Amino acid sequence: MTKPSSWPKQACWEYHKQGKTPVSVIRTGSACGPRDRLLADGDYINALMPTLMWPRGCNPRYSIVQAHDIAESAILAATSDKAVGQVYNVAGPDLVTPKDFIKA
Image (cartoon, rainbow, N blue to C red):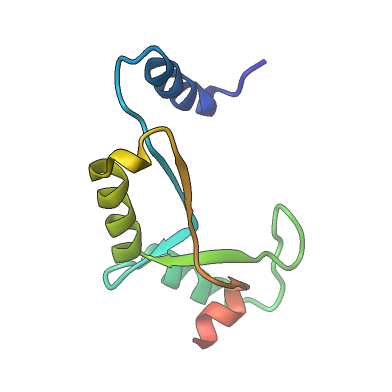
């Protein structure tokens, strides 16, 4: 059975294969920017807690990407003929833990 979250992606690729619309996909890491409060504040609160319960393990790591880098990538993917039919991963160079993020 197909996951509901993948239906929009599949529909986009199907339309692309049929020649109905050009499609480019960007996949991003965790977005962070100058007005981002959710990521920074949530991690800060969690880092202060003595014991954390993480759903996927005890030492989560993720890639942080600046919001302007995501925006620039989206614009390039949307405006370049070479990007049509391609999938791009937009991610930071390193994986970080929440505590590493707070220290930075």
